[in-house]
Image 1 (cartoon, rainbow, N blue to C red):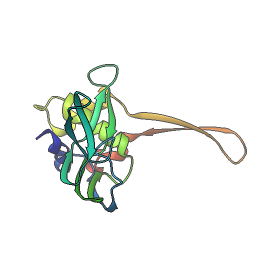
Image 2 (cartoon, rainbow, N blue to C red):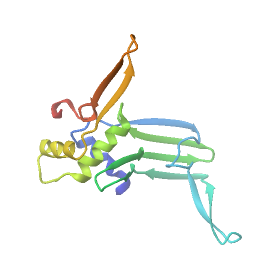
Image 3 (cartoon, rainbow, N blue to C red):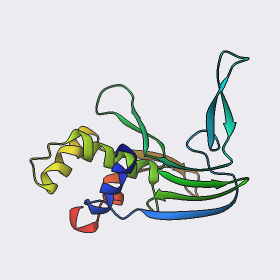
Image 4 (cartoon, one colour):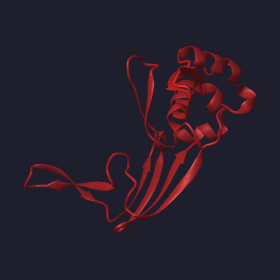
Length: 162
């Protein structure tokens, strides 16, 4: 069921995720490589990866923790893939914008907050764990440095929870 846990985002305070469909020659990885299977290779005394001819792959949200147990890092989006010889139908699940920040915020909310608290309390707790405030610098038309701070929690949550 781990592979489908990301679907809980649909019923959370986060904006909706949408399926993006791909149909064509095999081009969508599952997650790092094109769809493949492992076969026993007696000559190499081990297993060898070979491309799938026909088959399904259900890939869950890819993530890791970096410096501590609440420092979540997005790795790859959830994918459902069907391969038929050299053709692929894939469904990739993502929000419309800010997918890296969206999934990192969702991971914090889902795994690092107290589920006995209300939704608003959990969001407050998640914001304390990782503020998701980023500052970007750029030069304006006059050549002067401008710094802009963005809070990605405000961009990934439904408006009633901001």
